[in-house]
Length: 286
Image 1 (cartoon, one colour):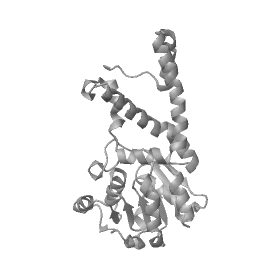
Image 2 (image 1 turned 45 degrees about the horizontal axis):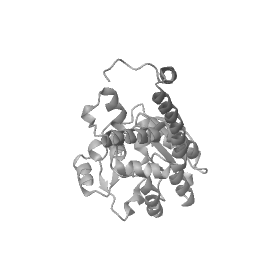
Image 3 (image 1 turned 60 degrees about the vertical axis):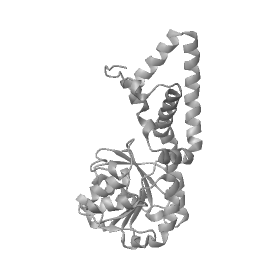
Image 4 (image 1 turned 180 degrees about the vertical axis):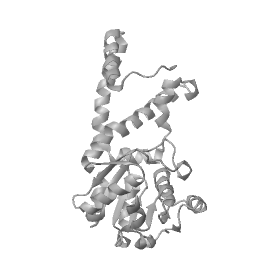
């Protein structure tokens, strides 16, 4: 969209999967991209690919020239990075992030006096891979993006956030930070935790992943996600995840009871209910 290329330079703080993919998409849209990353090799790779035109150093002073600023770092680092960046964001018209939890970063933006120009974002376009090497163009095409304003975000800022994500082919949806974190505890964070717990159970029982059928490989795919990123997400959304885990444990206890009794009727009822929710799976070897 023309509105994005007209806004001015965009600074992306963190050039991993999400930040790097945004940078690639903006570069081909003739947006000047400033890049920050703690890994020098990532910065060099982004420069060689002609994705970023300027490096933002540790001082963050180069952010004075940026009109859009996107924090694409782990959720446990985002709030402190925003605090460091705050003195240099006077010219920014939109500040956003891409983290999987929204409560802490939205609150920090408000506390720093940046609420008017800050709108939190969470694109549902992740991957079990991470880093610059995993980034790619068109990652956000037709992906839902939750847009989470602060209580003082200006209407024009929210509108710009929507325009930004639509320019990358994404589908923005407004949601409060509180509602976002409660919903994602079930729809994103819980599945990752369960996949990791299943993988550890199989590992401790000496069953390698190579022994799994297609269903087992699907169920454990998320277990290879970034340990650093996901430990930060779980810590940041602990209370909501506790409620989600409690709900899951209730189902698991009932399943264990039915399996221990050989209760085929109860097991059939379980699969009947889940098939009604998920729809029938395509035929595959398990």
